[in-house]
Length: 348
Image (cartoon, rainbow, N blue to C red; front, side, top):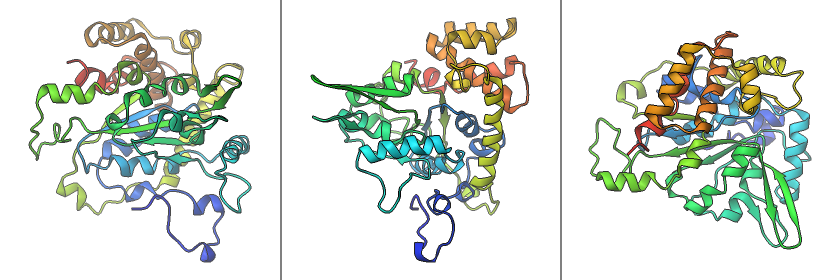
């Protein structure tokens, strides 16, 4: 299916933002664990500083289809966000014809053959790259291990800082790059290592070589790992309709308001994913039982200090969605669960 509705614009009287909105999630069949009221997906998109997410599973499980619909459940651009996004697209010479303002959240999906300059920006006169063109929107990287390793490594700065600096001999420019990274990958070269209905012929060394194309430091910066299993016939033939993207988007906006209220007196923090170490201690107090879980995760799963911080941030978000001021062990355990690639695939 195409990303945007293919209606004849001349016969469509809806506002531009509605006409350009991606197709709705109610068209997505199966994977109920991704779209429920307390799903992983909603945990990712309810952030103002967007959590990054990676979908992993066999071919045909719906990873790409799901990623294409992410912009549709993000809240509408504020005027300030629209102006920032418009400036970037104008500098890059990519402002849509007959449009003075970028009215919808960007969705960028570069091919895996892209260069590091194309992704991060560059040129004799530095221009914005894909990470900046996706500012306030979604950057989708399909078949993540197929990207060149040096290209993936340049994602570290924007994922950590929300901006990217391009330095040349006579000039240095900084472009905003606060985007939601949505990546997709197979669990092995053939793709069927986790598919119960198909045989995987990949050897252990082949799988490890394939997975090692994504470095540990980059994986550390991806907040939520979501398994997208193969969809069976019963799920595909189900007539049960899911929720529309508009309905989900309203819930996402409501969840964001909780964070805006929490951080309204803190000029350095705007959302859970924006918290630094000092903010974590202030807003994410955990009890002794939570600390035991975190200690076990660090020691037994080999998680890094960065992963530790991200688990707490996700747990704070889970508590918000549950309407709880307190972070309980169940929320910490769920946050650890979302580091599935750390413990299942990269542990050798």
